[in-house]
Image (cartoon, rainbow, N blue to C red):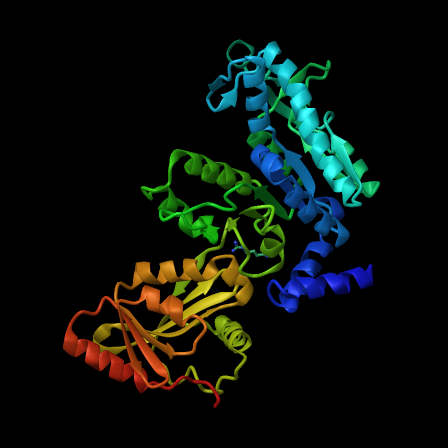
Length: 436
Ligand code: ARG
């Protein structure tokens, strides 16, 4: 095992840094075996990306991680119904499941399940298809929906048994009543119920697009619900499908421990998403509060200094804070991000320090901090070295930028030309507080 791990870490190092990879592997391995991750695989991925999917899952398994896989079979079922001449009908987003539909659906779901199990076994991974015995259900609305099941109870025994036997559990979205009536369960609902019952460290949705897309079709890297949810739902480009997805994830996370995260990614990007800080896909977390303090309380001094020194890999002068006219501090609940505001020219705040640990950057904490800052301060200016790794990002946020040798001064909300001049001059003359 140690040998395998070493090779794999080396491999993972090619995606990001091997330090990152090792850190995540350690983090994921610490979790109780059955609680690492629930991976929901959409029917389309099962159909179009089976090989990539099996490869990504096999890779995790080889690392000693056992995700619980749950899959749908929507597109396969649509196809089969069309071939059989059975019309597809949906109500409230649920597939109306007559006896006739069920007769077509069952073999289709079995086949999809088997295809994934086979693909995994072909790669030398023990896998176990679990078609029944997990979702105990009752009929949601026999009249309107037919054999659509409403989940009453989740039985994890078959899943645990599979994992104990060293097999990767592959669960289908079928449920049954205590008397054995088989029912069709909507895959998103099944995923939610399974997740609530397993309480995994990670919830992973594998989709064709590989993440949630913003207004210009780019994958949104991270969403922190505490700070972004309302704002996101108000965006004109959030169409009904995405709204529904966000609401579902919001409700799902509400009932889980605060450090649970959801990743929406593709089969091909799964490894990168899991083992790097920046990931590849959309990471959604409940997120954390960002508080504003008018003064730096004694209890925050040491943590702030530690955060700055560790993140920048430099040392601060002993009296670095003493010389500053502090306006206040934004401080993330977890202590992994902060922004120190000091008094600047003409009552405009100067952003003296902005710090986010690399890990928290992947979670989108930097963006959340920035948003909090912008909400409180319509005008602000700061400086950074031209070679700063986030110079490009600062450039995007700023309204004006002024380059002076190795320094760049950025401003927001300052229009007056004369004022701009004094602000830039002030920024360039400041003492950083770092030991040279
Ligand atoms: N590897 C970490 C995780 O899986 C961070 C992923 C960050 N992903 C992102 N899309 N921002 O939890």
